Length: 218
Image (cartoon, rainbow, N blue to C red; front, side, top):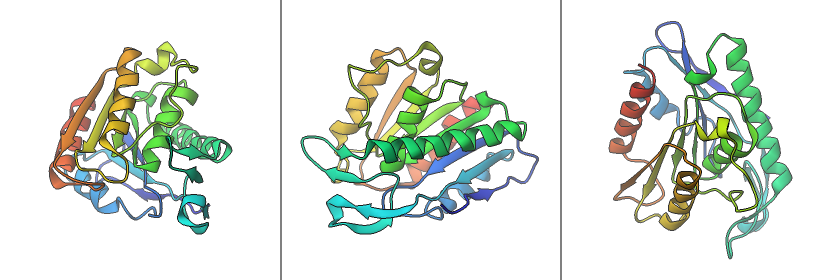
C-alpha cells in the first residue's frame, strides 16, 4: 500500500483531516480540495491515503484502487467484510499516527467520498472508540450499519456532516439518507446537506465543508 499524501499547512499543524478517495480514484483525487480548504484552515494538515489495487467483482474483476471488493449491487452492496476491516485498521493507524505527532483527537477529522466514506462511517461508529473532531461523509453510504450493531456513547459524540447529490446515480440519495437517519437515531449530532448534482463534488460543497470545519476548530 502506498504511503499517504500529506499536505502540511502554512503554520504548525494543530488539526488534521484524513480523507479517503472513492473507488477507482487515488490519493491525488482530493488534493485540490485539500489545498483549497487549507487557504482558510491555516493550521490543518491533510492526510490522503491510497487504497490498494485489487480486483472488483462488480466491475468484471478489473483491478483498481479499492478499499474493499463489492461483490453485488442488490439488494444493497454486498462487500468483502475482511477487506473493509483492513481499511478501517489503516484509518485507525493514521489517526494514532497523528495523535503521536501531538494532534489532539478532538481535532482529528476523518472524511471520505463514496466507498471511502463507507470506510469512514464504519471506522468512526463501529470500530474506533477514541475522541474525534468529526466525520465528513460525501456521496456515501453505510453498508455495515444495521439493527444488530451498537454505536457506543463515546462514538455517538462524534459530529457528522453528510453531503449528497440529489441526482446521484451511483450512490442513490436514499442510501445516504439511510445512514443519516441511522446516526440520528443513536443521538449523533448529524447534519444533512443536499446539492443539485450527481456523484461528484461541487464548489459550494467545498465551501460548506470549510465553514463546518472552521466552526469545529475554533
